[in-house]
Every structure is written in C-alpha cells, then in structure tokens.
Length: 113
Image 1 (cartoon, rainbow, N blue to C red):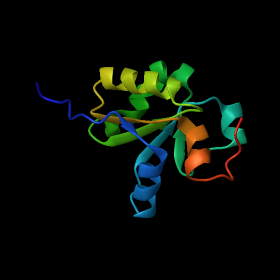
Image 2: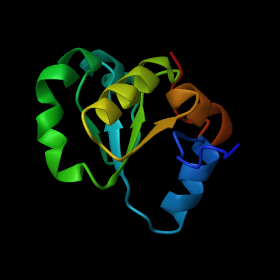
Image 3: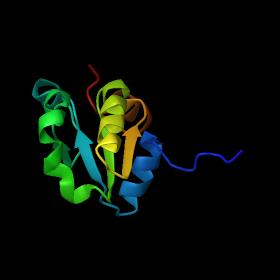
C-alpha cells in the first residue's frame, strides 16, 4: 500500500523555520476581525471563515501555489483548507494548533485568547 505523500499540515516550528529562511508563503487567516485585533501572524491575509464560500475566487491566482491557512486552534482552518482543496486549490496547508500553538512554540509574546 502506498503512503499518501500529499502534505496537508504544517507545524508552527516548520513555518517559522521557513519564514526565517526568507520564504514568503501566502498565509491566510480565516478568523473573525475581532480575533485579528487580539493577535495575528505578520503578513497574513484575512478572509473570515464565514465569507470564504463567497470570496474564495479572490484567491484564484493562488490555485497552483502554496497557501498556509490558520485560525485560533486549527479546527476552523482545517475545515477551510478542505473546502479550498475541493475548489481546486492544489497546495493548502493547515497550521496545526493554530495561533495558540504558534504562541506556545514560536512566539510567547502573541496574546492567547
């Protein structure tokens, strides 16, 4: 039996390593605006989960490119990542554990809520 080689997730430490190496992946925040006011990852774009169904075409130019998607804990972003894959996006990665895990493992100055 062949293993599935399609990567579906990225950990905060993996993302931090890539950012530190100068990579600039497209990072999509699907939280609500009031959550973004509390904390956010630098250089991330915002399309709240409730708007993604109507607004995913705004990302059409990224269908072949990597998109890293995150929320507070990783659950909402996982659902949104699956939705985008269903719309033909080829490389959507969910940030496991969301911004809470980012705060725990990468940047303790990020406000947890």
